[in-house]
Length: 270
Ligand code: DGL
Image (cartoon, rainbow, N blue to C red; front, side, top):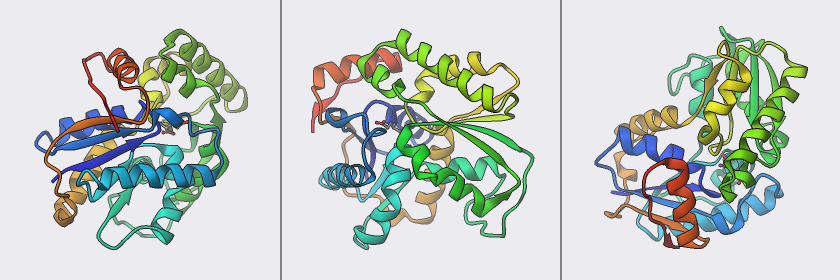
């Protein structure tokens, strides 16, 4: 009954951790495509092919349901995956919609017309590919009217995290936040629209100030998965064993994962 969790690298571990806390009996197979990270500077076509390869690898582990714990893959590839590639008996879910539902105060499956919501000024921090896709604005427009979104493409943060360089990552967070605040001086909410960014959440909050509510996806995605599995238990796959797989060097990736998650994590070669 395993579920797969896919990311380009280490960021999806933030989502994995929240799912494991919410559904402690559910076996989870994590796959980080560290050999090909970062995805955020790749073309949509490239992201589509890499994501399909990762999803297939997780199917081979008995995971019929795969969570794309990666905004870049969710934004640039998920729709194409669902419309052109996915067999009937498999599911691939992204990380965008649960967060937008939380921001727009909606419950799952509430398809009523877009309406006014409390939050009016939203800062979005994401990878260049996610920002370029405009997927966040598109999903938001289905649900809310009158929300002003200012998006900051945060080049370099994922690379710094994958290299394990927390000092560089923090400096980049500060400079990207400053750049956004020049265009939107008083955001009410900030969305960390890349699953790597919660690893630097304290730095984002420091740079934004305490009056800005920072939304990160992990808890929201875990809650929405629990709800999905209650409704669709048939997508619990055959896999029984939890593990962490990487396309990169397992020793190196285990070291970085342990550094960022502050607990020992052991990756195996995918
Ligand atoms: N964690 C991925 C995301 O949520 C990072 C993408 C990348 O590799 O650039 O977007």
